[in-house]
Image (tube, rainbow, N blue to C red):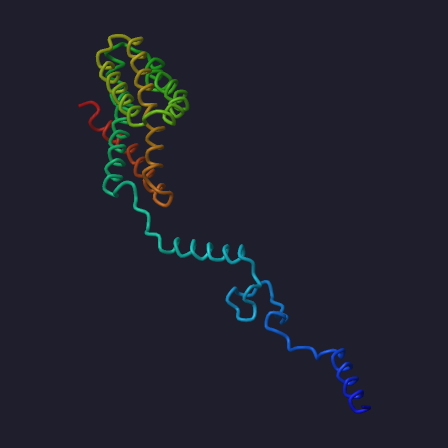
Amino acid sequence: IFRNLAHNAASLLGRGAPRPAAASTPAARVRPRCDASALPLDPGCGHARSNEQVGEGTTLMAATDAGAAAPPRQPLFSEGYKQSVLWLLVLAYTFNFIDRTIISTIGQAIKVDLKLTDTQLGLLGGLAFALLYTTLGIPIARIAERRSRVNIITIAIVIWSAFTALCGMATSFLQLLLFRVGVGVGEAGLSPPAHSLISDYFEPKKRASALSIYSFGIPLGTMFGAVAGGW
């Protein structure tokens, strides 16, 4: 009897005893602490970085690859076309200076024919031409920023060429003075749109050379005006 009672008591005490702690499951394991700069594929830091950080890195790498693989941008105009435009502007600038300086080449013959004084001859070669040539440059440049520059140059060439021809038909000082003012008005319309066109056609590393070639029309026009002006 005592043996059975002892066995039953031992069984009751064994049921109430605490069980030993079970081995930690993989889900309960403590993940290693990761540095914020760890790569998203780091074995010890698989989920350390947020999805936004991973997405930003992927987008940055994709943009870098796309920029590196982008083909070079093709120029809008061929080199031959740009050179053709430049030399046409040089030709126009050459005639600009031929018509501008021709009055000084044949000034003595004009003085005798129209019986002009030295003061009147000086006004024809200086003030009559330069008065509107210098003051119209800025408004014409503003118009060139809003209108067709090619049309402005075309109109300017027509105006100064027509007034140059009219100078040969003048029979008095007043007529010749007014015609010279018209020449100045026409010639003021060339350089502002021409400089704007050259700046558009030529990139900055070639623009200085293009502008210097355009300015070559000054000595060319002066030379031809002096040599062939009275012919």
